[in-house]
Image (cartoon, rainbow, N blue to C red; front, side, top):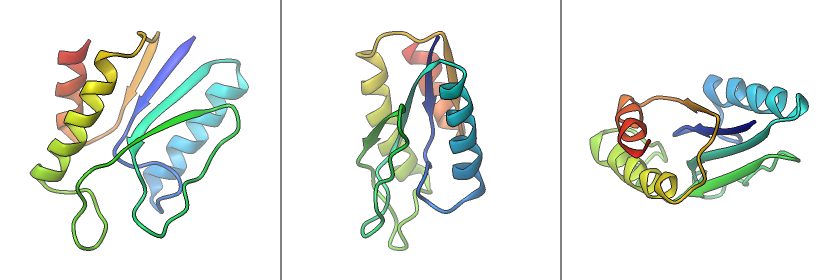
Length: 111
């Protein structure tokens, strides 16, 4: 099955959500699913990690001075970037969408 995961944060950014999503992605991959992650590019000076067998597509988004994606303007930059990617991507059998809540609204419109 084709699975698309949409999240504002993913490995290597240090957070509980990143660790949980990485474990989910690896489990889906190990059970034979085709997994694509749509997420934000990590902050500057943070290496972009790769997980063998997983496609990760990064979007450039606005970050605050501390390197975080938070606040309406930054969430909107993420939502618009991912919305455009979803419109032109082949449909998946399963979508896993992580916060912020605006992502749920964007997914609803895109699907």
